[in-house]
Amino acid sequence: MSGLQGKRILFGITGSIAAYKAAQWIRELVKEEALVTVVMTAAAERFVTPLTFAALSGNAVHRDMFDESPDRVMAHINLAREADALLIAPATAQTMARIAGGMADNLLSAIALAARIPVVLCPAMNSAMLAHPATQSNINRLRQFGHHLVQSGCGALACGETGDGRLPEWDAVRERLLGLFQINDLQGKKVLITAGPTREPLDPVRFLSNRSSGKMGFALARAARRRGAEVTLVAGPVTLVDPPEVEVIRTTTAEAMAAAVLERAPSMDVIIKSAAVADFRPTACQPQKIKKTQQGLSLDLIKNRDILAELGKRRLPGQLLVGFAAESQNHVAEGQRKLREKNLDLIVVNDILGQQTGFDVETNQVTLIDRKASQTLPLLTKEATADRIWDKVLLLCGESPVHDE
Ligand code: PMT
View 1 (cartoon, rainbow, N blue to C red):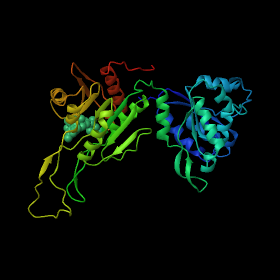
View 2 (spheres, rainbow, N blue to C red; view 1 turned 120 degrees about the vertical axis):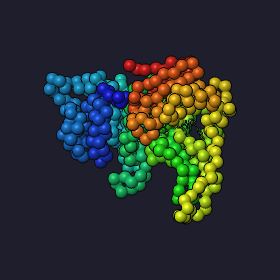
View 3 (tube, rainbow, N blue to C red; view 1 turned 180 degrees about the vertical axis):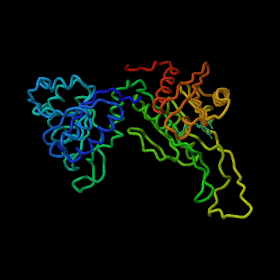
View 4 (tube, protein in one colour; view 1 turned 90 degrees about the vertical axis):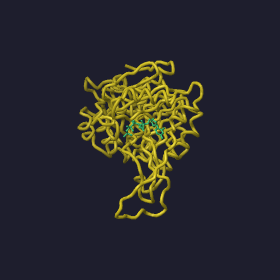
């Protein structure tokens, strides 16, 4: 189940060429079972027809402040009252100026003025318009009102220029929306998470690695950020995009991952090691590509240092240390052994032979083992699993996880 399921999103669309992207965002919201109602400004209608958004949202589009039909009188009050969040995307310089100035001269700005719900704005415009002191001062004012401004992107703009002002990516907006509906129970905590595999080079083109996709670790990072933590993610070589508002350090080998983790560990409150670190590496990386021979090939391997065990030895008072265990048999016994030997507070054991658990799938089923008890969770998405792991971490910190439902 997505955190957006059942959430009522009032989606304001304003007059920018980026209005066409709102169509895809509405599809994404509907896919996650959010309930979307669209409000368009007159300028937005010059770019995309209301029919498009009515068809995609499954609801009539609101455009007129003075609509006399009985169910639409006082629409600016009722729509804001009936929604969980107001998302304005694209948000033009004009609409932001209206809202920053407290104007209520069209339906959307009147709704923004009447809204007691969170307001999320996604600016999209030419770089010069965005950089203009008037727009910047409006953005600051909107922030002072407590509105959420999603950072616009940088790149090719519709006007032919390159620079700031692109509509933010949906991923960043989705994270911001999810964060609105989550209590900040990890606020004030600095957390470090590792994710993905490592690659141990054999020669310039070959390496030893494993099937870890990084999905579990990235889900932990996103969940922690949504819950208010300051997050550092040390990732091995994976193809996943950086989670918004997370410091991401990309590494390749186990040794590089160890250096990145051990350097940052002393300032962290919680460390979760979900990376699948190679236990061994070739004794040497050959400078030239290894040639095919008739005889086959033997590799000399040496052991990599165990980063988690090292963290267990060096950990500071009050720091919470969580490991993962990828097991194919004797899950609980193996988990308990690693918990003890690596001096951990919690170990998350997953079955790597299951079709829907472990490496490179969207779901996981894990057993959480601490020093007193163990608990097996149901099969869940990695996103939901991540939240359950953070709930457990909070309990081990002596705090209670907070849920809004
Ligand atoms: O990335 P995904 O495709 O989403 O898959 C997720 C996962 C299956 C990789 C993840 O859920 C998982 O189980 N990660 C740990 C995999 C692993 O290396 O397990 P292990 O039992 O070999 O290691 C135990 C712990 O020691 C792990 O926390 C590991 O990060 C750590 N370790 C291991 C070796 C080493 N040299 N240094 C370490 O820190």
